[in-house]
Image 1: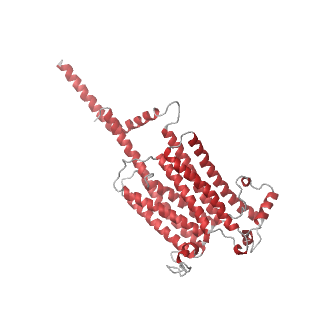
Image 2: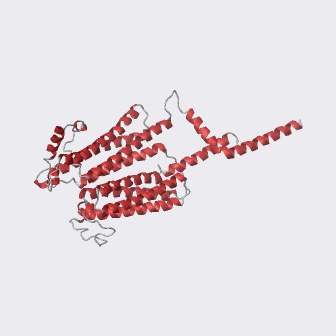
Image 3: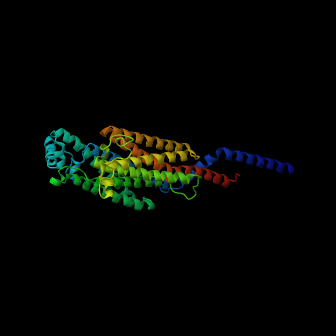
Length: 420
């Protein structure tokens, strides 16, 4: 009897040692197994699981945000090529079919000739039909991409809503985004209309910089809304997240995003006033740190919106502030125990920020060529994407949270099977 008890106790000790070693080496595998088991039992009757819903929502929101970003970039190129006033009509459905025959193009061209933009462009040499086609196609591409973006957002939104697959926390943001899409379409035509108004008082065709900046600001807000909630669908919030030093990184990241947005919006005034052409020297303004015509308008506040010199001065200094904040974010982040993915994103952010600054200076020194002006916009959006991905609670914090959750789940699974 004593021999049997001794043997059983030795077997128990052997099993315990085996399970302890197993738990040390395979804790993460246990966690993955538990997640997989939970995934198998989370759906019933062949319906999509909650995780699948979140994935579909995130793909939809990220796709919409990406198309909004592309529309903004194409809109910037349209502005740089001075193509925005080539389509003088605004018809939701009829203008979706472009001119096909030569007669159709001539009809469009004759309508365009009635407006100040044609007279301005033909002041030195008369515009040809081929030149008109080039600017018309650019504006047409911008409008069609904008409408395609609206459809890509609206059709899945209606489908998810009617099928009950839209998360409750997304309903208000989706309605807000839909309102912004409609407002953006109306504001776009309202902006173009400001440059089409004819008459002696407006013989020089120019789009209102206020309407242009409002159009850009709405687009930036729409992009931010879609991208933010796309991240929320991928990385759901948690109150258990805590890393020493993370608050400072999040604060710097938020400040960087705000500064980037302000710089982008000020770029709308730069574009509207052609302020990139008034001082084409760097770092000084015609051998001065402070330009002589900085505050020449009365009242003084009007200079910040109507004076090209002041607008360029503000845009430059906002860019300096953005680069400084991004650098501070990078320095703080490099001192934290972040995973490799987060560190790669941090390095990408600071690289893109300095690349953007360099392209901006080059664009200024070369008198804003179309190619460099278009290139100047792309890193701005890449930097904005990366910065949101890094520091906000829906970015880098969520990546760390996933790692912490796996470890906690592994410990919990090990405890439940009796391994200590």
